Image (cartoon, rainbow, N blue to C red):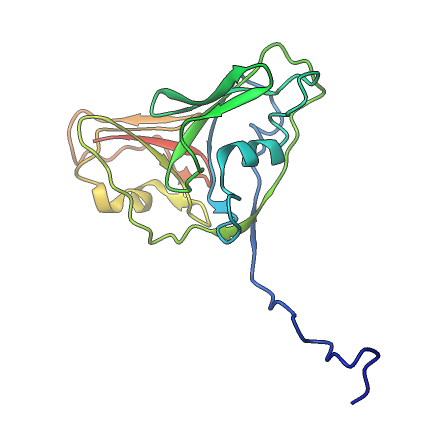
Length: 199
């Protein structure tokens, strides 16, 4: 075969890898001060692509330019500020990388000094739904939801059904006084929110 530069056209080609895509819509563009977020899809193959500050910059929630008002005030994980504005044009990251198994609270700045919140999707791979998560008794467990489809409440918590006493998300909460009681408040667990378990 004859090539212009004597190099076969497929030499050095990188095979295509299936990607997933996830987007948090910040409550359907309705602004409130705190958004409960998890990241079911992250780029897990590129170095430092899950670093919190890098993700927040790509989501346009923070900016290195001090003249631009940041949308984000800080990120909370397990009731501690883990990402916050430290000093002039410096953001502090005390947690490292975002993890699909964890959930976070994004505290957004008030008042709104920008025209809406940018909604930027994340391209990468979905966290395997069979990935185990360690839960601890007598404390809150800040858990990310990485189901690829909405699921019934009973199916979502089947493996710990006799152990949990309360489950909280941004827009709903379920509590019960005795283990084994069947709650009837929630029908579906949505994809992507922080879910807070108390065992």
